[in-house]
Length: 189
Image 1 (cartoon, rainbow, N blue to C red):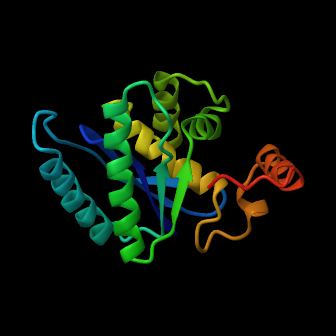
Image 2 (cartoon, rainbow, N blue to C red):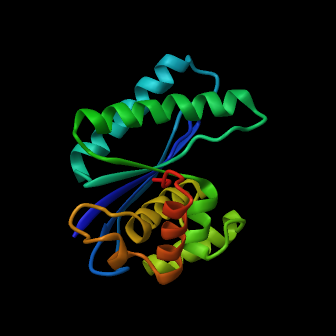
């Protein structure tokens, strides 16, 4: 079994989802949580608090790989700054533990979990619930998003011990990877 930690980064709400990945597309919930910090607090204190929580998760669950949402441009500069700052913390903590990090775009995660890159948060949450066999949709949405990141890594990534990309990808996903190689574009991770 491969342990995958999905992280939906944010300074106010940080979603973490840990799953185990078995043969094929078998995934199982291990842990999910959302860590929060008060928006009015000092940014250094907020980053420090989230860093300590992330260290605990990394040391307790010892993931084989971390799936982190890729920071993308937004109109709200404060939001993107907080997301980028926490993403840097995740990258540094994983690097210190020699854990590979896979960066995933929101549309890539939506496509992997729902089959459509423009799916709504409600659709993502509903399918995360179904895929993991949960009684209810993980809430808030940051929790479902973190689990969706981990599921995407399980299904699209080449996590340690999971075999080759051809074994873990659907035919459509493999065709996409091959098209990226032909176009000589770097593969998104």
